Structure formats: C-alpha cells, structure tokens
Image (cartoon, rainbow, N blue to C red):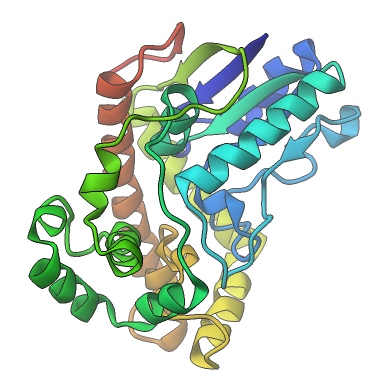
Length: 295
C-alpha cells in the first residue's frame, strides 16, 4: 500500500498541488505541518480554505487541520500516531493517503520511526510551560548541559520538551533519543514528492501570500489570540505563538511597529525558515520526484 508524501518549503504551493494531483488518485489529504494542527491562526498558518480544498469540484477529505486549540500541545509522536490512524482510515475507505507539509521531523518520524518517549504528567507540563523562556533555558543548562548544548536559546518548544522529560524521568532527553526507533504498524511503501521552486519564485510567493493574509483578515485572528494571552487564557509561550509573523503582527497591533514593518519582518523570518527547510530536504530525505529547481 502506497502512501504519498508531498513535502516542500513554506509558500511553495503544496496545498494546491496536493488537491490537483490528489484528485486523480481519490486522495485523502493529511496535514503534516505542526502549526496547521492549530485552529487558532488558520490564516496566518496558511491552512487550506474550502475553495483551496477543491470543494467546488466535490472536494477531497482534509484531515489533521485545526484539531488543537491554542492551549494544547503536541509532539512528533502524537502526530505520528494520529497520522497512522488517518492513513489506515483512508485505505479502509478506498482512498489514497497524501501527507502534505513542511515539518520534516513529523514526516521523518512516520517513515523512519521515533525513539520511545515517556508520558508527561499534566502538573509537570503545566509548570514547565508556565516558566519564562529565559529561565527555562538557564535551568536546562544547569541540569542537562548535554541537551542544552544541542538547542538554541530561542528553540522554546524543544527546550520545554527537554525539561518535561528531565522532570518526569530524571534522565536527559538525549538518553531517550538514543534508544532504537519504533515505527507505526503498517506495511506501507512511501512515495516522496518534493516541491522545491527556485529561490526567487519562493520569495515572491512569500510576500504575495503575506499581502493576501492581510486582505483575508489575519489581523483579526492575531488580535483574538493576543487578547486571550493578555487575559491569561492562553500561555505566553503556547506553541502556536511561534507561528511565523505572530509576534510582529502583535507588535503592530500594540503600535510598537508599523504594519508594513511587521510584514517585512515576517517575510524575512519566513525566508530564513524556508532556507532551513530546503537544507533539510537536501540532507534528510531522498525524494522519488522533484518538482521545481534546487538552488
């Protein structure tokens, strides 16, 4: 049974291509982008809308989009289990599973497996996530220098994960990661399609998409999340807050920078991220088909 993986950098056109080609295979589209798992910022995270899903032509089922709220967390292991369930469901209904996204860790976990990880008690997770980012990194440096040396100070999600494991088990996350990986149950063959347009086209797409997001009302969803954070309903360091552009657009709402500056900073941040994604593609995965030019 064949599972199609469509991977590529942000703004490369994965969602549209998935619908166009997936329609010929009676596909179910399964999200493999960490930020698109959240329901809070659908415009900013570029979740495919109804028309983009092909709804006018009968549509294709889209799974694992917007199934988490802003207060929830997830891991590669959580996503892998959910994705495996959706793959089995697609096959059971005679559909072809297409996994679409840019979170390489998720796709690598599905295809190659993950080392087993401990369950984190709710009280430990709450304490870790309530700790200011700088203080959390300092604590990790003091208690687990091996793991902290692998992480950048701004890599909040992985720092929190490392502290959760350390608090729960008394062992470094690195020790758990060294255990043999386990793959989901399923006799699946993977077809990997890499969408990798030229750099100049990708940069134009990024800016055009940001302008379209503003027209679509992205500032209202940013305002709504910012208000929940200010009210204490959502933690300041909730995972969804690392969505590209949120911190800059929030500053624009506060009057700390202009909207144009916020958009430009978001474009720069997104371009930097796509560079890392393209590097990952070159070194971490061997595609069966490449669409576009590698540069």
